Image (cartoon, rainbow, N blue to C red; front, side, top):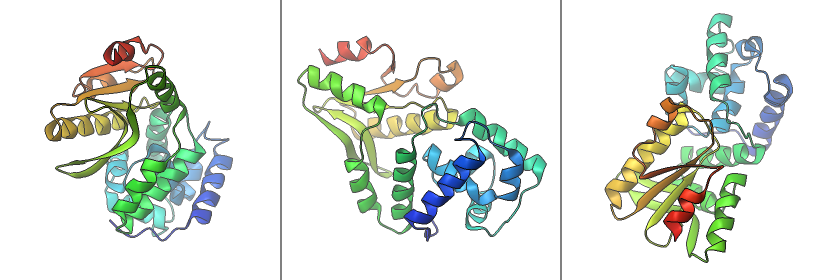
Length: 237
């Protein structure tokens, strides 16, 4: 993974540029992406994806994505930019957070610099998302011991999860309706089950997610909609 030399201030400026060009990410103009492919770095951080996974999402080579971000490739054909924008628009998270986007930037920057341990430590201390706060409130109401943003070792290295409840329940919470995000979560569920078969895995997803996305989460023991948490309450009793 190439070292990320962009500092926090430069990334924030890039984020504000992307926000301005897209009317706060409400409408992505393919002409802008064609002329400014380096803005794709912001969208990668919004999705919380590494270069390889983001390249798969856009059906591109990861070296090409890297060159877009670094400015080695300074423009994209408008027809190709239109295809990319269609994917980004479809996969855009429903609750976009500047804070989470910047947190993702920190994580991938540290990983690219070889600071994996520091990256996971930062993830463990990250502020809870709105969805995670609802889960935290529910866990507190039940008086159950839990650890937020818990890092566990697997056969592909350490992975960070939203909640470890006692020593029996692992909870992931997402606001995304993206197929790519679902595939990533499903893969993580599979790896954690291989390493910790005694853990029951739960994923909390937004209402209205498509069946195609939901199928990608079948490696979780339980799939629960965020607007109906009584299924989680049953597991906590």
